[in-house]
Image (cartoon, rainbow, N blue to C red; front, side, top):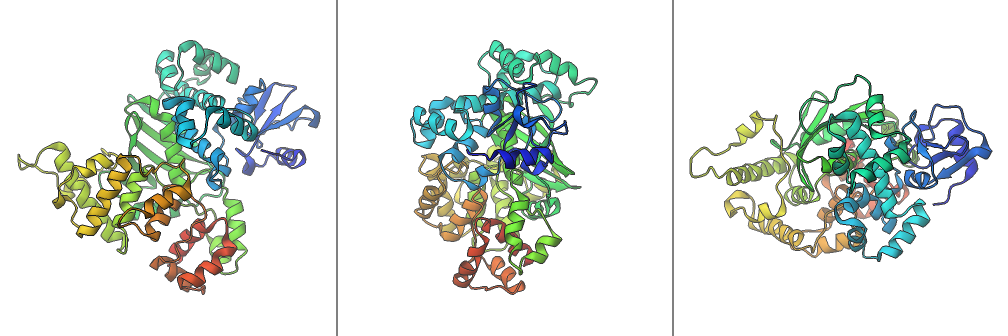
Length: 494
Protein backbone atom coordinates (compact mmCIF):
# COMPACT_ATOMS: atom_id res chain seq x y z
CA UNK A 1 0.00 0.00 0.00
CA UNK A 2 1.65 3.22 -1.18
CA UNK A 3 1.32 6.28 1.04
CA UNK A 4 2.39 9.76 0.08
CA UNK A 5 4.51 11.15 2.91
CA UNK A 6 3.40 14.77 2.47
CA UNK A 7 -0.31 13.97 2.44
CA UNK A 8 0.01 11.70 5.47
CA UNK A 9 2.10 14.24 7.37
CA UNK A 10 -0.44 17.00 6.68
CA UNK A 11 -3.19 14.76 8.07
CA UNK A 12 -1.12 14.16 11.21
CA UNK A 13 -0.23 17.84 11.57
CA UNK A 14 -3.96 18.76 11.46
CA UNK A 15 -4.93 15.85 13.78
CA UNK A 16 -7.56 14.88 11.21
CA UNK A 17 -9.66 12.00 12.59
CA UNK A 18 -11.03 11.20 9.13
CA UNK A 19 -7.76 9.39 8.43
CA UNK A 20 -7.82 7.20 11.55
CA UNK A 21 -7.50 3.60 10.42
CA UNK A 22 -6.25 4.55 6.95
CA UNK A 23 -2.65 4.53 8.18
CA UNK A 24 -0.59 4.65 11.40
CA UNK A 25 2.12 7.12 12.40
CA UNK A 26 5.35 5.69 13.77
CA UNK A 27 7.52 8.03 15.84
CA UNK A 28 11.07 6.69 15.92
CA UNK A 29 12.26 9.10 18.63
CA UNK A 30 9.73 7.78 21.15
CA UNK A 31 9.25 4.23 19.86
CA UNK A 32 5.46 4.54 19.64
CA UNK A 33 2.87 4.48 16.90
CA UNK A 34 -0.30 6.59 16.86
CA UNK A 35 -3.44 7.26 14.91
CA UNK A 36 -3.34 10.42 12.73
CA UNK A 37 -5.66 12.31 15.10
CA UNK A 38 -3.47 11.77 18.17
CA UNK A 39 -3.64 14.99 20.25
CA UNK A 40 0.08 14.86 21.09
CA UNK A 41 2.45 17.45 19.63
CA UNK A 42 3.14 16.70 15.96
CA UNK A 43 6.51 14.92 15.71
CA UNK A 44 9.31 16.26 13.52
CA UNK A 45 9.36 14.99 9.96
CA UNK A 46 12.66 13.14 10.27
CA UNK A 47 11.27 11.15 13.22
CA UNK A 48 8.15 9.96 11.39
CA UNK A 49 7.37 6.80 9.44
CA UNK A 50 3.96 5.76 8.12
CA UNK A 51 2.55 2.23 8.20
CA UNK A 52 -0.48 0.70 6.48
CA UNK A 53 -1.44 -1.39 9.52
CA UNK A 54 -0.92 -1.61 13.26
CA UNK A 55 0.74 -4.98 12.70
CA UNK A 56 3.33 -3.37 10.42
CA UNK A 57 4.11 -0.75 13.08
CA UNK A 58 4.45 -3.47 15.71
CA UNK A 59 6.73 -5.41 13.37
CA UNK A 60 8.99 -2.35 13.23
CA UNK A 61 9.38 -2.54 17.00
CA UNK A 62 6.97 0.26 17.93
CA UNK A 63 4.41 0.12 20.75
CA UNK A 64 0.87 1.47 20.74
CA UNK A 65 0.35 5.00 22.05
CA UNK A 66 -1.49 4.96 25.36
CA UNK A 67 -3.04 8.36 24.70
CA UNK A 68 -4.79 7.86 21.35
CA UNK A 69 -5.09 4.03 21.41
CA UNK A 70 -4.47 3.39 17.71
CA UNK A 71 -5.64 -0.21 18.00
CA UNK A 72 -9.15 1.10 18.73
CA UNK A 73 -9.35 3.25 15.58
CA UNK A 74 -12.01 2.50 12.95
CA UNK A 75 -10.95 -0.04 10.34
CA UNK A 76 -9.78 1.07 6.94
CA UNK A 77 -12.68 1.72 4.54
CA UNK A 78 -10.57 0.11 1.83
CA UNK A 79 -11.82 -3.30 2.91
CA UNK A 80 -15.42 -2.25 2.21
CA UNK A 81 -14.59 -1.14 -1.32
CA UNK A 82 -12.01 -3.69 -2.37
CA UNK A 83 -13.14 -7.13 -3.47
CA UNK A 84 -9.65 -8.47 -4.21
CA UNK A 85 -7.81 -11.13 -2.23
CA UNK A 86 -6.23 -8.72 0.26
CA UNK A 87 -9.59 -7.09 1.02
CA UNK A 88 -11.24 -10.50 1.46
CA UNK A 89 -8.37 -11.67 3.68
CA UNK A 90 -8.67 -8.63 5.94
CA UNK A 91 -12.40 -9.21 6.42
CA UNK A 92 -11.83 -12.88 7.26
CA UNK A 93 -8.97 -12.10 9.68
CA UNK A 94 -11.23 -9.59 11.45
CA UNK A 95 -13.86 -12.33 11.77
CA UNK A 96 -11.33 -14.57 13.57
CA UNK A 97 -10.67 -17.13 10.83
CA UNK A 98 -6.92 -17.29 11.60
CA UNK A 99 -7.63 -17.84 15.31
CA UNK A 100 -10.05 -20.67 14.51
CA UNK A 101 -8.47 -22.32 11.47
CA UNK A 102 -4.94 -20.97 11.34
CA UNK A 103 -3.21 -19.48 8.31
CA UNK A 104 -3.76 -22.72 6.31
CA UNK A 105 -7.51 -22.34 6.86
CA UNK A 106 -7.43 -18.71 5.72
CA UNK A 107 -5.40 -19.59 2.61
CA UNK A 108 -7.79 -22.43 1.78
CA UNK A 109 -10.81 -20.13 2.07
CA UNK A 110 -9.16 -17.71 -0.35
CA UNK A 111 -7.87 -20.33 -2.78
CA UNK A 112 -4.16 -19.43 -2.51
CA UNK A 113 -1.07 -21.03 -1.04
CA UNK A 114 0.09 -19.80 2.35
CA UNK A 115 3.32 -18.44 0.84
CA UNK A 116 1.57 -16.44 -1.87
CA UNK A 117 -1.01 -15.11 0.60
CA UNK A 118 1.79 -14.01 2.94
CA UNK A 119 3.54 -12.29 0.06
CA UNK A 120 0.40 -10.37 -1.00
CA UNK A 121 -0.49 -9.24 2.52
CA UNK A 122 3.08 -8.23 3.32
CA UNK A 123 3.25 -6.13 0.15
CA UNK A 124 -0.05 -4.35 0.89
CA UNK A 125 -0.23 -4.30 4.69
CA UNK A 126 3.41 -4.50 5.73
CA UNK A 127 2.67 -7.70 7.68
CA UNK A 128 1.64 -11.28 7.01
CA UNK A 129 -1.62 -12.94 8.10
CA UNK A 130 -0.17 -14.27 11.37
CA UNK A 131 1.11 -10.83 12.41
CA UNK A 132 -2.21 -9.21 11.48
CA UNK A 133 -4.10 -11.78 13.55
CA UNK A 134 -1.62 -11.33 16.41
CA UNK A 135 -2.30 -7.57 16.47
CA UNK A 136 -6.02 -8.30 16.69
CA UNK A 137 -5.46 -10.78 19.54
CA UNK A 138 -3.54 -8.12 21.45
CA UNK A 139 -6.44 -5.68 21.07
CA UNK A 140 -8.96 -8.34 22.15
CA UNK A 141 -6.83 -9.16 25.19
CA UNK A 142 -6.59 -5.48 26.18
CA UNK A 143 -10.38 -5.13 25.98
CA UNK A 144 -10.87 -8.19 28.19
CA UNK A 145 -8.26 -7.00 30.70
CA UNK A 146 -9.87 -3.57 31.00
CA UNK A 147 -13.53 -4.62 30.96
CA UNK A 148 -13.64 -7.91 32.87
CA UNK A 149 -12.29 -9.39 36.07
CA UNK A 150 -11.24 -12.64 34.40
CA UNK A 151 -7.95 -14.27 35.35
CA UNK A 152 -5.11 -13.55 32.94
CA UNK A 153 -4.87 -17.19 31.84
CA UNK A 154 -8.55 -17.18 30.88
CA UNK A 155 -8.07 -13.96 28.94
CA UNK A 156 -5.06 -15.36 27.11
CA UNK A 157 -6.99 -18.29 25.67
CA UNK A 158 -10.19 -16.29 25.11
CA UNK A 159 -8.20 -13.80 23.00
CA UNK A 160 -6.81 -16.61 20.85
CA UNK A 161 -3.28 -16.98 22.21
CA UNK A 162 -1.75 -20.44 22.24
CA UNK A 163 -0.14 -20.03 25.66
CA UNK A 164 0.05 -17.64 28.60
CA UNK A 165 3.70 -16.97 27.82
CA UNK A 166 2.84 -15.91 24.27
CA UNK A 167 0.09 -13.69 25.69
CA UNK A 168 2.47 -12.00 28.16
CA UNK A 169 5.22 -11.49 25.58
CA UNK A 170 2.85 -10.02 22.99
CA UNK A 171 1.23 -7.52 25.35
CA UNK A 172 4.60 -6.38 26.67
CA UNK A 173 5.77 -5.87 23.10
CA UNK A 174 2.63 -4.12 21.81
CA UNK A 175 1.77 -1.99 24.86
CA UNK A 176 5.12 -1.87 26.68
CA UNK A 177 3.24 -3.04 29.77
CA UNK A 178 2.63 -6.29 31.55
CA UNK A 179 -1.01 -7.46 31.43
CA UNK A 180 -1.37 -6.81 35.16
CA UNK A 181 -0.22 -3.22 34.66
CA UNK A 182 -2.93 -2.67 32.04
CA UNK A 183 -5.50 -3.80 34.57
CA UNK A 184 -4.04 -1.57 37.26
CA UNK A 185 -4.25 1.38 34.86
CA UNK A 186 -7.99 0.76 34.66
CA UNK A 187 -8.15 2.26 38.13
CA UNK A 188 -11.37 1.96 40.07
CA UNK A 189 -13.51 1.32 37.00
CA UNK A 190 -15.68 -1.71 37.66
CA UNK A 191 -16.09 -4.50 35.16
CA UNK A 192 -19.64 -4.94 33.81
CA UNK A 193 -21.89 -7.15 35.89
CA UNK A 194 -22.52 -10.70 34.74
CA UNK A 195 -20.33 -13.49 33.42
CA UNK A 196 -19.35 -12.97 29.81
CA UNK A 197 -20.53 -9.32 29.77
CA UNK A 198 -18.23 -6.84 28.04
CA UNK A 199 -18.77 -3.11 27.50
CA UNK A 200 -16.73 -1.32 24.85
CA UNK A 201 -16.77 1.55 22.38
CA UNK A 202 -16.93 1.03 18.62
CA UNK A 203 -15.29 3.97 16.88
CA UNK A 204 -16.51 5.38 13.58
CA UNK A 205 -15.69 8.21 11.19
CA UNK A 206 -18.20 11.03 11.58
CA UNK A 207 -20.78 11.92 10.57
CA UNK A 208 -23.06 9.02 11.45
CA UNK A 209 -26.79 9.36 10.81
CA UNK A 210 -27.84 7.08 13.68
CA UNK A 211 -31.56 7.63 13.31
CA UNK A 212 -31.56 6.36 9.72
CA UNK A 213 -29.78 3.18 10.82
CA UNK A 214 -32.12 2.56 13.75
CA UNK A 215 -35.22 3.34 11.67
CA UNK A 216 -34.15 0.84 9.02
CA UNK A 217 -33.47 -1.89 11.58
CA UNK A 218 -36.57 -1.17 13.69
CA UNK A 219 -39.08 -1.59 10.89
CA UNK A 220 -37.54 -4.98 10.03
CA UNK A 221 -36.94 -6.20 13.60
CA UNK A 222 -37.98 -9.79 14.26
CA UNK A 223 -39.47 -10.60 17.69
CA UNK A 224 -37.18 -12.80 19.74
CA UNK A 225 -34.18 -11.99 17.54
CA UNK A 226 -33.85 -8.20 17.64
CA UNK A 227 -35.51 -5.08 19.01
CA UNK A 228 -35.04 -1.31 19.04
CA UNK A 229 -35.83 0.50 22.33
CA UNK A 230 -34.99 4.07 23.36
CA UNK A 231 -32.27 4.58 20.77
CA UNK A 232 -30.61 1.20 21.37
CA UNK A 233 -30.55 -1.77 19.01
CA UNK A 234 -30.63 -5.19 20.70
CA UNK A 235 -30.15 -8.51 18.99
CA UNK A 236 -29.16 -12.12 19.47
CA UNK A 237 -26.07 -13.53 17.77
CA UNK A 238 -24.97 -16.89 16.40
CA UNK A 239 -21.19 -16.97 16.74
CA UNK A 240 -18.47 -19.53 15.91
CA UNK A 241 -18.17 -20.88 19.48
CA UNK A 242 -21.63 -20.19 20.89
CA UNK A 243 -24.36 -17.63 21.24
CA UNK A 244 -24.44 -14.02 22.34
CA UNK A 245 -26.48 -10.87 22.71
CA UNK A 246 -25.52 -7.28 21.97
CA UNK A 247 -26.94 -3.85 22.74
CA UNK A 248 -25.71 -1.07 20.42
CA UNK A 249 -26.29 2.60 21.29
CA UNK A 250 -24.99 5.24 18.85
CA UNK A 251 -23.52 8.24 20.65
CA UNK A 252 -21.28 11.15 19.72
CA UNK A 253 -17.99 9.77 18.43
CA UNK A 254 -18.64 6.08 19.06
CA UNK A 255 -21.25 3.35 19.39
CA UNK A 256 -21.55 2.01 22.94
CA UNK A 257 -21.71 -1.79 22.79
CA UNK A 258 -22.58 -4.19 25.59
CA UNK A 259 -21.94 -7.81 24.68
CA UNK A 260 -23.01 -10.93 26.55
CA UNK A 261 -21.14 -13.94 25.19
CA UNK A 262 -21.48 -17.61 26.03
CA UNK A 263 -17.82 -18.06 24.99
CA UNK A 264 -15.35 -15.16 25.22
CA UNK A 265 -13.40 -16.51 22.25
CA UNK A 266 -16.20 -14.99 20.20
CA UNK A 267 -15.35 -11.40 21.18
CA UNK A 268 -13.37 -10.51 18.03
CA UNK A 269 -15.92 -11.97 15.58
CA UNK A 270 -18.79 -10.40 17.53
CA UNK A 271 -17.15 -6.96 17.34
CA UNK A 272 -16.38 -7.41 13.63
CA UNK A 273 -19.99 -8.37 12.89
CA UNK A 274 -21.43 -5.46 14.86
CA UNK A 275 -19.13 -3.05 13.04
CA UNK A 276 -20.21 -4.58 9.74
CA UNK A 277 -23.90 -4.40 10.65
CA UNK A 278 -23.71 -0.66 11.31
CA UNK A 279 -21.19 0.00 8.50
CA UNK A 280 -18.87 1.71 10.98
CA UNK A 281 -15.72 1.46 8.84
CA UNK A 282 -17.19 3.52 5.98
CA UNK A 283 -15.79 6.90 4.95
CA UNK A 284 -18.98 9.03 4.89
CA UNK A 285 -17.20 12.22 3.83
CA UNK A 286 -15.89 10.60 0.64
CA UNK A 287 -19.21 8.87 -0.06
CA UNK A 288 -21.32 11.98 0.47
CA UNK A 289 -18.95 14.12 -1.60
CA UNK A 290 -19.36 11.81 -4.60
CA UNK A 291 -23.14 11.58 -4.32
CA UNK A 292 -23.60 15.29 -3.55
CA UNK A 293 -22.04 16.13 -6.91
CA UNK A 294 -25.43 15.14 -8.33
CA UNK A 295 -27.79 18.11 -7.83
CA UNK A 296 -30.73 15.71 -7.39
CA UNK A 297 -29.12 14.12 -4.31
CA UNK A 298 -27.32 17.15 -2.90
CA UNK A 299 -30.23 18.52 -0.79
CA UNK A 300 -30.87 15.14 0.87
CA UNK A 301 -27.17 14.71 1.65
CA UNK A 302 -26.96 18.20 3.12
CA UNK A 303 -30.01 17.46 5.28
CA UNK A 304 -28.91 13.94 6.32
CA UNK A 305 -25.13 13.50 6.14
CA UNK A 306 -23.54 10.19 7.09
CA UNK A 307 -26.19 7.73 5.89
CA UNK A 308 -24.80 4.17 6.14
CA UNK A 309 -25.75 0.87 4.50
CA UNK A 310 -27.14 -1.47 7.19
CA UNK A 311 -25.46 -4.79 6.58
CA UNK A 312 -25.73 -8.17 8.28
CA UNK A 313 -24.35 -10.14 11.22
CA UNK A 314 -25.53 -13.43 9.66
CA UNK A 315 -25.36 -14.06 5.91
CA UNK A 316 -27.82 -16.95 5.97
CA UNK A 317 -30.35 -14.88 7.90
CA UNK A 318 -30.04 -12.11 5.34
CA UNK A 319 -30.53 -14.56 2.48
CA UNK A 320 -33.69 -15.98 4.04
CA UNK A 321 -35.01 -12.46 4.58
CA UNK A 322 -34.24 -11.57 0.95
CA UNK A 323 -36.05 -14.59 -0.50
CA UNK A 324 -39.11 -14.07 1.68
CA UNK A 325 -39.05 -10.34 0.90
CA UNK A 326 -39.19 -10.83 -2.87
CA UNK A 327 -42.09 -8.83 -4.32
CA UNK A 328 -43.79 -8.27 -0.96
CA UNK A 329 -43.86 -5.37 1.45
CA UNK A 330 -41.50 -5.08 4.41
CA UNK A 331 -44.45 -5.59 6.79
CA UNK A 332 -45.63 -8.72 4.98
CA UNK A 333 -42.12 -10.18 4.94
CA UNK A 334 -41.72 -9.49 8.66
CA UNK A 335 -45.02 -11.25 9.42
CA UNK A 336 -43.96 -14.34 7.42
CA UNK A 337 -40.55 -14.42 9.07
CA UNK A 338 -42.10 -14.13 12.53
CA UNK A 339 -44.33 -17.13 11.82
CA UNK A 340 -41.31 -19.10 10.63
CA UNK A 341 -39.42 -18.29 13.81
CA UNK A 342 -42.46 -19.15 15.92
CA UNK A 343 -42.67 -22.55 14.26
CA UNK A 344 -38.95 -23.07 14.80
CA UNK A 345 -39.31 -22.17 18.48
CA UNK A 346 -42.04 -24.77 18.87
CA UNK A 347 -39.91 -27.47 17.24
CA UNK A 348 -36.76 -26.37 19.05
CA UNK A 349 -38.38 -26.54 22.49
CA UNK A 350 -40.26 -29.76 21.69
CA UNK A 351 -43.46 -28.48 23.19
CA UNK A 352 -45.94 -29.27 20.42
CA UNK A 353 -47.15 -32.44 22.09
CA UNK A 354 -47.67 -30.79 25.48
CA UNK A 355 -49.92 -28.07 24.10
CA UNK A 356 -47.74 -25.28 25.55
CA UNK A 357 -46.44 -23.98 22.25
CA UNK A 358 -44.81 -20.61 21.79
CA UNK A 359 -47.08 -18.04 20.18
CA UNK A 360 -46.22 -14.95 18.14
CA UNK A 361 -47.61 -12.80 20.95
CA UNK A 362 -45.32 -14.48 23.48
CA UNK A 363 -42.35 -13.70 21.26
CA UNK A 364 -43.42 -10.04 21.24
CA UNK A 365 -43.99 -9.99 25.00
CA UNK A 366 -40.58 -11.43 25.97
CA UNK A 367 -37.98 -9.17 24.36
CA UNK A 368 -35.36 -9.56 27.07
CA UNK A 369 -33.83 -12.87 26.00
CA UNK A 370 -32.84 -12.67 22.35
CA UNK A 371 -31.42 -15.45 20.23
CA UNK A 372 -29.75 -15.68 16.87
CA UNK A 373 -31.66 -16.49 13.70
CA UNK A 374 -32.13 -20.15 12.83
CA UNK A 375 -29.36 -21.87 10.84
CA UNK A 376 -29.46 -23.77 7.56
CA UNK A 377 -29.75 -27.21 9.18
CA UNK A 378 -32.53 -25.99 11.45
CA UNK A 379 -34.49 -24.61 8.51
CA UNK A 380 -34.16 -27.91 6.68
CA UNK A 381 -35.63 -29.67 9.71
CA UNK A 382 -38.87 -27.65 9.68
CA UNK A 383 -42.09 -29.20 8.33
CA UNK A 384 -43.95 -27.75 5.34
CA UNK A 385 -46.54 -26.22 7.67
CA UNK A 386 -43.90 -23.99 9.28
CA UNK A 387 -43.32 -21.89 6.17
CA UNK A 388 -46.69 -20.31 5.46
CA UNK A 389 -45.77 -19.30 1.91
CA UNK A 390 -46.13 -20.53 -1.69
CA UNK A 391 -44.48 -23.84 -2.49
CA UNK A 392 -41.97 -22.25 -4.87
CA UNK A 393 -40.68 -19.85 -2.23
CA UNK A 394 -40.54 -22.58 0.40
CA UNK A 395 -38.47 -24.78 -1.89
CA UNK A 396 -36.23 -21.84 -2.75
CA UNK A 397 -35.46 -21.49 0.96
CA UNK A 398 -34.71 -25.19 1.26
CA UNK A 399 -32.53 -25.10 -1.83
CA UNK A 400 -30.57 -22.22 -0.33
CA UNK A 401 -30.22 -24.05 2.99
CA UNK A 402 -28.94 -27.20 1.23
CA UNK A 403 -26.44 -25.13 -0.80
CA UNK A 404 -25.15 -23.45 2.38
CA UNK A 405 -24.95 -26.76 4.24
CA UNK A 406 -22.94 -28.52 1.52
CA UNK A 407 -20.68 -25.52 0.86
CA UNK A 408 -21.96 -24.72 -2.64
CA UNK A 409 -22.88 -21.22 -1.46
CA UNK A 410 -20.82 -19.24 1.06
CA UNK A 411 -22.55 -16.25 2.66
CA UNK A 412 -19.53 -14.96 4.61
CA UNK A 413 -18.26 -11.44 3.83
CA UNK A 414 -14.82 -12.69 2.77
CA UNK A 415 -15.96 -14.52 -0.37
CA UNK A 416 -15.36 -13.51 -3.97
CA UNK A 417 -18.43 -11.33 -4.55
CA UNK A 418 -18.79 -11.98 -8.28
CA UNK A 419 -18.48 -15.74 -7.86
CA UNK A 420 -20.90 -15.68 -4.91
CA UNK A 421 -23.54 -13.83 -6.96
CA UNK A 422 -23.15 -16.34 -9.82
CA UNK A 423 -23.67 -19.23 -7.41
CA UNK A 424 -26.75 -17.59 -5.92
CA UNK A 425 -28.28 -16.98 -9.36
CA UNK A 426 -27.82 -20.67 -10.17
CA UNK A 427 -30.22 -21.63 -7.35
CA UNK A 428 -33.94 -22.01 -8.18
CA UNK A 429 -36.05 -19.11 -6.96
CA UNK A 430 -33.20 -16.59 -6.69
CA UNK A 431 -33.17 -13.83 -9.29
CA UNK A 432 -31.07 -10.71 -9.90
CA UNK A 433 -32.85 -8.59 -7.26
CA UNK A 434 -32.26 -11.14 -4.50
CA UNK A 435 -28.64 -11.82 -5.47
CA UNK A 436 -27.81 -8.11 -5.72
CA UNK A 437 -29.60 -7.33 -2.45
CA UNK A 438 -27.39 -9.94 -0.77
CA UNK A 439 -24.30 -8.52 -2.48
CA UNK A 440 -25.12 -5.18 -0.87
CA UNK A 441 -26.14 -6.31 2.61
CA UNK A 442 -24.50 -9.72 3.23
CA UNK A 443 -21.31 -9.34 1.17
CA UNK A 444 -20.87 -5.61 1.79
CA UNK A 445 -20.56 -4.51 -1.84
CA UNK A 446 -20.71 -0.67 -1.76
CA UNK A 447 -21.62 -0.34 -5.44
CA UNK A 448 -24.99 -2.06 -5.94
CA UNK A 449 -28.00 -0.27 -7.41
CA UNK A 450 -31.32 -2.13 -7.07
CA UNK A 451 -32.82 -0.35 -10.07
CA UNK A 452 -35.71 -2.83 -10.42
CA UNK A 453 -36.81 -2.33 -6.80
CA UNK A 454 -40.19 -0.62 -6.61
CA UNK A 455 -39.23 1.59 -3.66
CA UNK A 456 -35.99 2.62 -5.37
CA UNK A 457 -37.94 3.59 -8.49
CA UNK A 458 -40.45 5.57 -6.42
CA UNK A 459 -37.62 7.36 -4.67
CA UNK A 460 -35.99 8.18 -7.99
CA UNK A 461 -39.29 9.60 -9.28
CA UNK A 462 -39.70 11.67 -6.12
CA UNK A 463 -36.31 13.25 -6.77
CA UNK A 464 -37.04 13.88 -10.44
CA UNK A 465 -34.68 11.13 -11.63
CA UNK A 466 -35.28 8.48 -14.32
CA UNK A 467 -37.45 5.76 -12.78
CA UNK A 468 -37.27 2.87 -15.25
CA UNK A 469 -34.51 0.30 -14.60
CA UNK A 470 -32.52 0.80 -17.84
CA UNK A 471 -32.55 4.60 -17.67
CA UNK A 472 -31.85 4.66 -13.94
CA UNK A 473 -28.91 2.28 -14.42
CA UNK A 474 -27.40 4.58 -17.03
CA UNK A 475 -27.96 7.67 -14.90
CA UNK A 476 -26.44 6.02 -11.81
CA UNK A 477 -23.03 5.55 -13.42
CA UNK A 478 -22.14 8.96 -11.95
CA UNK A 479 -22.65 7.53 -8.43
CA UNK A 480 -19.94 4.88 -8.69
CA UNK A 481 -18.43 3.37 -6.55
CA UNK A 482 -21.12 4.23 -3.96
CA UNK A 483 -24.36 3.09 -5.60
CA UNK A 484 -25.36 1.04 -2.54
CA UNK A 485 -25.45 4.29 -0.55
CA UNK A 486 -27.49 5.90 -3.32
CA UNK A 487 -29.93 2.98 -3.04
CA UNK A 488 -30.44 3.73 0.67
CA UNK A 489 -30.97 7.41 -0.18
CA UNK A 490 -33.60 6.52 -2.78
CA UNK A 491 -35.38 4.23 -0.31
CA UNK A 492 -35.54 7.11 2.16
CA UNK A 493 -36.80 9.44 -0.56
CA UNK A 494 -39.65 6.99 -1.25
